[in-house]
Length: 270
Image (cartoon, rainbow, N blue to C red):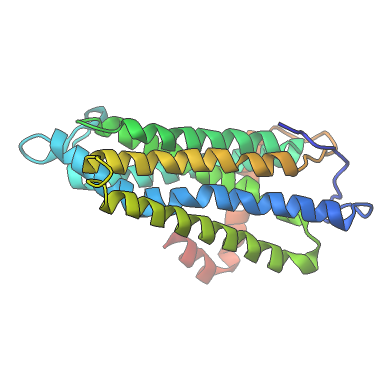
């Protein structure tokens, strides 16, 4: 994996003045590909396949009253997916300020992005092994994958001010979204072809679903190589408190400031 060159970051977040347009475009093209890599998780896994499949596994493992018992807690089998998504959001909310502060203070966004991306991709690929009564494994992998993609997107978005001039950012951001929608739609269509025609491929329905889930993880991991090769780390001046304290202090300050914007706060809470 190429680490690229490093340079001192402009405190304003503006790309360095001596950075050529060609080098900036190279980073932008690499940046687009992270959305291309991870959007398949949101479409194929989270939106289409995992919810019904995990629910069917949980129902197969449920007691006569329709409950499963993760960590001894009674949960209706039909609600396991929703509770797992909620748990992943809690994990992400805890991690995102810490990881964001660590990235800002060290300038080492790329290793953190790699760690989050490949943790999520590995968890998604591991969904191939969801069968029988393995609802606990499914819930765990969902929590890991969903929290990982949330953390990775914080790091991904933090690159935008560094790779694009202010007047470019709307266009660059829109292209990133377009790359993501393209890959999400493409992989979802291929997965639906496999799923609807699973008998023609000699597969059981559950096997087809597990392949669809795992393929999203493989895609995510494979195309993450592109941004990791093209994006550059930028060193920052040392100093300040640790990432954990800094991240939470910034979050608390933001929440206090939100009192001046009650409509925005209500929207975020909703």
